[in-house]
Image (cartoon, rainbow, N blue to C red; front, side):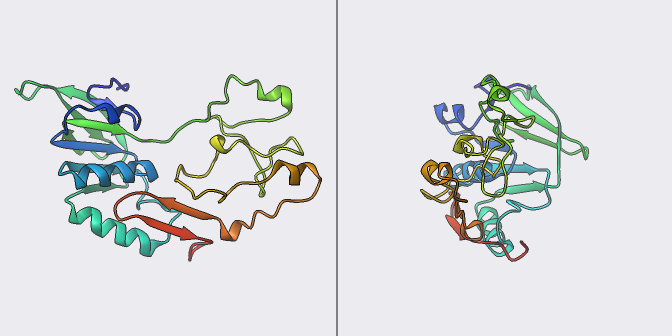
Length: 214
């Protein structure tokens, strides 16, 4: 079912809601999905999160995720982890407004007043003719880069908006590199082990460097 701005929303147009729904289903529990789920739950909305991976935010340390999961459940958030959506349809349950039924591949069904689809963003690069510059992208428009975030064009770095990293909100400079440094021919010091990430759900969490498993 496509985004309609009435029952199924993106993370942009859901901000235009005039009234809080009684229930909200969040499809995709990445950084943005967790952020909106925690915000709506804090406002008293019954939230159900649907995520195909077996845990939230796999790139974040398990201890942080355990604490986040605890606080989300404390706010009555239901998590359907390891589940994939099969179909989404509008249903009439006799009320004055339609609701949304989500069928999962496992056979389970979830009914909610509104749905937030947060399954990732694509880079806005498909119409840029990247091939003319000797740069390639993947199926989601993300520019292919090496370990220091340089594209195949030897003196360039990728645009920050075409990241293959999860769409977390990072502190300024966490993955920035000066073009003057790369243009000089010197290898930039990206210090990947010290890159910082920050997600903005309640409670707020931050991390720096490698996780325990990386």
